[in-house]
Length: 266
Image (cartoon, rainbow, N blue to C red; front, side):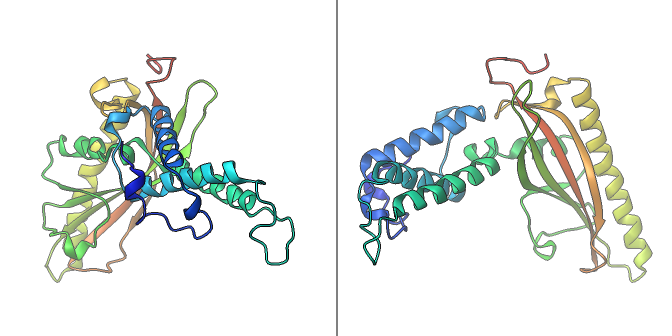
């Protein structure tokens, strides 16, 4: 079990509902987490705890409390004896919160293993230092070889008419450093780094289009990239010289290979 009733005191914070939380509610909430994991193609033994996962499980717990208590004690928590059902109102809130959190959680968050995206760049052969997540450029030890930051953005539902599809937003930043007072030298550096990154991403898109399983199948999560495209490219406006960088926004379309349709487009 990831969540034990005895250890939940530090997490529970809803003043109205915390006193109503039971061991059964905690256990059932964890089962709902595994239902989501299964939907995302992640086996329950690979799921780990994190801040976001804890927030989702808390919402599951409070939803269970609300479902059990809704309309059981009409007027108990009103100041004027009216029959407003606060549990029903809380239920609406936590249903909406669960929907929001579930829409943003990815297989990588469930497993704590986003390295599949990083490995695509690392394996390209270019001498980039690849960092997962956003970091202040000044703290990233950037040199002329370049640093790439892979940053997860929004997770969105895709076209589910044939098979479950999701769209994953990724921000990829490429940074270099040049201390020459001639700013044009820095521009030449970042242009070369951009060319390298764009070759990597173009090859990835081509490999996905050719159904190269070594590139388009994310082995740990069980998802297949069916397309990935750049939607914007923005420079840093020379804001942190001698560092210079560019941010790309990519949107990847992925399908779940672990569904009963088994195999995606193969």
